[in-house]
Picture (spheres, rainbow, N blue to C red):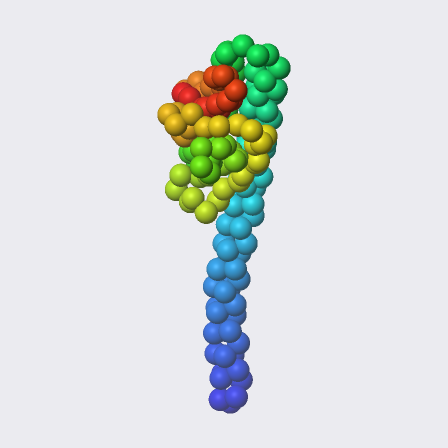
Amino acid sequence: MPAPTISHVILTGALIILVFTVQLFYFYVVDNIWAEMVRRELKELTDSISNTVANLYFLVNSTSLDTTLKKTLNLPSRVSGSSYRLEIVSSGGAAQSVRAYIEVKTWINATSWLTPGLKVAQANQVIQSVGRTALAGCTRVSKNVYVWLAQ
């Protein structure tokens, strides 16, 4: 009689271990799917801002006068329930890209490239999603075109 009891105990233990293992893998997969969804939403956001800045650049660059153009950005207050930040990434004063990332999990981010020839205005290049109105702008000063983000 001990053989059926031992096999019953072994199979019950294996079933309990299987339930907990599957649960751990399930949460891992769900977290990865959530992260990919957030990345795609951030990519749409950075693409939109990059296109807006490119349009402003072409408008400002089409004239020889020193001018400033601003555009109100329609940004969501949160992305998948999390607050985020937007920044213009620069290298040596030249604007390279627009980067968005979740504040709590900075490894979840997205980047969109900017049009070559833009320079970064030192102030107001990082904005935070707090539900306020955000602006993107281009300023032409002599032969340089500066891009900026502001709240």
